[in-house]
Amino acid sequence: MSKTTPTGSLTILLTFDPYQVQGARLSIPLLMIDEHIPQFAQFDHLPEGVYSGTIVAFLTNGEEAVHRIRIKIVQNQGNLHEFRISGRPQEVIVRPVDADNKTILFSELKIENVDMNFRPVRDERGLICKVRPGDYQVQIILPNLSIKTLPLRITSDTQMYTLTIADRHAQSRREARVDLNVPIDYQTTEGLWIPTESVNISARGVCLVKRKWSLEDENMQLRIYLPIVAAPLICPARIRWVKEDGSSSAMGLEMYLTQNLKKELNKWLAQNEKKPLK
Image (cartoon, rainbow, N blue to C red; front, top):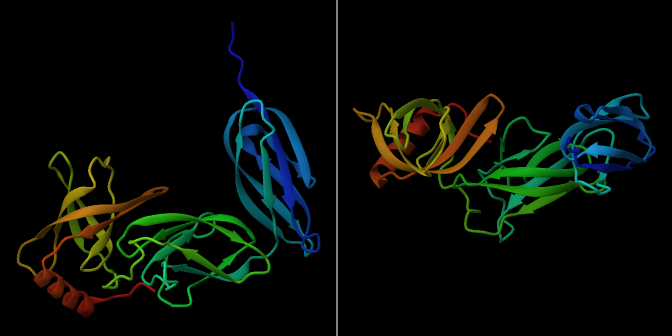
């Protein structure tokens, strides 16, 4: 006797400004949906699961705007998903702050489905972004290299957005990180040394290219090849975050150096600085 695939319905509710948007097309390839839809549309007998798709907004000026979406189908439910679609991106300012409403300088943020890479915050006023109104998730790499994810709702009538991170991680970085490629080895739990290189580095932490290896412990040893010492510098470090972006991977580590080594490293970084993170 064959097993019946669990199914549910999908209900789509679109919100948009009719002066900017005159229609929309929904495409979810795995569900074989590709059609023009009104502001309210329903699809029945769809297999449960999570699916990716797009809503193409047809703008009144003749242009098109593509909105990436993810929907979830739960068995025997209506599964309402509401999307706000809009026209041209607008310029807004996103400002990560601590509990005292101070901008967290030297943090980095990335708006999912908008930014390709993390962008550093070096201005007290925040970071200028071009984004359409809608709901987003923002990833923020904090000064101690930990990473937070916060929701962000962009509306057409607001230009400034504050993201509050009220914990001990929201501290300004004491040393700015510098974009610099330095040979580094990191040690696996099996004792093997994996060769890689830094993406950026400071006397407190380093972001490096992560090679293929499953992380079993947040603590590890680093072997850093610097011209300021005769032999490779070996120091303990702790993994603060790991991110996977398609074919590339990176991880941020907090390094534990002696005060003398920190001083020497800061001096060398200042002399060899190529491009400070903005």
